[in-house]
Image 1: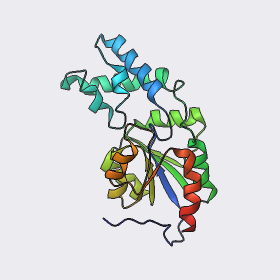
Image 2: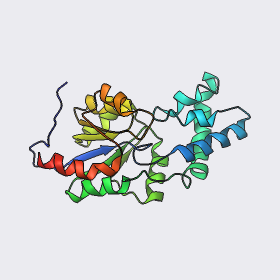
Image 3: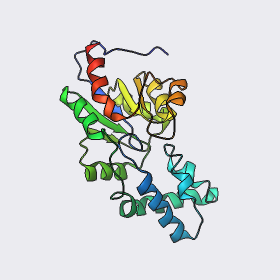
Image 4: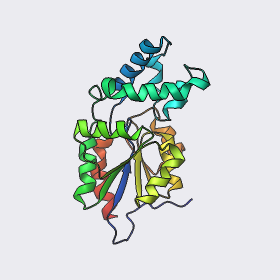
Amino acid sequence: MAHVTSAPVTSRPLTVGFDLDMTLIDSRPGIHACYQALSARTGTYIDADLAITRLGPPLADELVNWFPADQVEAMADVYREMYPTHAIAATPAMAGAREAITAVQATGGRAIVVTAKYEPNAKLHLEHLGIAADAVVGNLWAEQKAEALREYGATVYVGDHTGDVRGARVADALSVAVATGPCGAAELRAAGADVVLTDLTAFPTWLTGYRKA
């Protein structure tokens, strides 16, 4: 699949999609606390330290490691119910997150969040941290993210996971990866990321160059 490496010539405003967990927010402390609370509530052992090393995929993909398959859906509902109490206040923004969103909006463009996280909880995070995205779409993972990216006309998608790279490629959007999550820079490049940044603090400068190219 061919990828655009410079800003497309178009009269439409720029739309950039962003992943949430480990891209815009450091969700490890909050998710760790929520897993511990779920473990205490259900009496089921969950290695929260291990679980937060593999963030990105849907919640069910993690819960199946700790609960029988026929209980995963119900446990996911319990987790999501508990999440606002245990995870929102404990979760900080990633370095450069607010500035990255603002940099897109300063061009007259739109910054949208497309995440695998349960959408109401994703919105709570952004509200708590004062990150003013133009739209939030949840419950989409990897290639599924292309649905929202296409719907909003996003030509760039920023994420930290190889699943985010795949979503960008299916949407024919430029894949900008940040090496702040479970996938390292080499892994992100091997997955097909067009650009790999150390973190979002580098994004505004990159965006300026991209728009001038």
